[in-house]
Each structure stands twice: as C-alpha cells, then as structure tokens.
Image 1 (cartoon, helix red, strand yellow):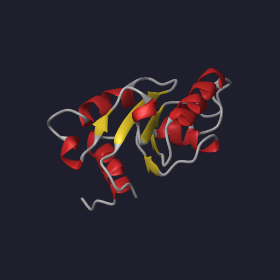
Image 2 (cartoon, rainbow, N blue to C red):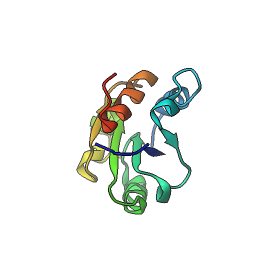
Image 3 (cartoon, helix red, strand yellow):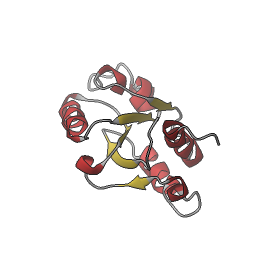
Image 4 (cartoon, helix red, strand yellow):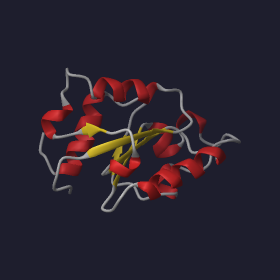
Length: 132
C-alpha cells in the first residue's frame, strides 16, 4: 500500500499502442484520477509507480530494467494489458521474451487487450488501498 498520492511513470514497451490510448483515456478529466491523487509524471526519478504495457523484446528489456532502477524506493509496478502479462497474441514469437514479471516484480496486474480505463484506475487505487 502507498501512503501518499502516487506519481505514475508510464512505459510503453514494444506494443500496438492500444494500451497507450487507454492510459490517455484514464488520465482524462472524465475519470479524473487526480481525485485519488494520481498524477502522471515525465521522469522515472519522480515516480512512485511504474506502469508498464507492451511486450518485452531483446531491445526493450534493457530499457525496462534501466527505468525500473531509476525509480526511487519504495516503488510499485503495474503490468497493464495481455502483452505485458503473458505476451498476448504474440507469445512464442521469435522477438518476444518472457512477461514483465520475469524481469521486475509486479504488484498489480490489469488484464485485458486493451484493458478499459476504469480497470487501470482501479488497479492504481488498489495500490492505495482504496475500495472502489
């Protein structure tokens, strides 16, 4: 559980960008995640939460590990979308490595292809210990 308002850094790995569109919808005024104190930041050095979507491939593996190391402790990770959870429809492909949780610890999983914005806000709220 996070004791303060979470600042989220979004990292889109190799993906179709479906999850990226849902992240944009989730932080829009309609759902208003700032009512829970959720703020999207532009630097991992300012973040409390790493939100990851997309596939881990050989090139993006190094990016994922580098960004994860830059986030100060205590840090939390949310894996969003089928690709980051299991590899999705691309699982078993020559350019797809293992899911995100094989490289960094994941605290909350938000399944779907792509997950709805409400599911993402709910996943972040779970880190806060909020009941929605």
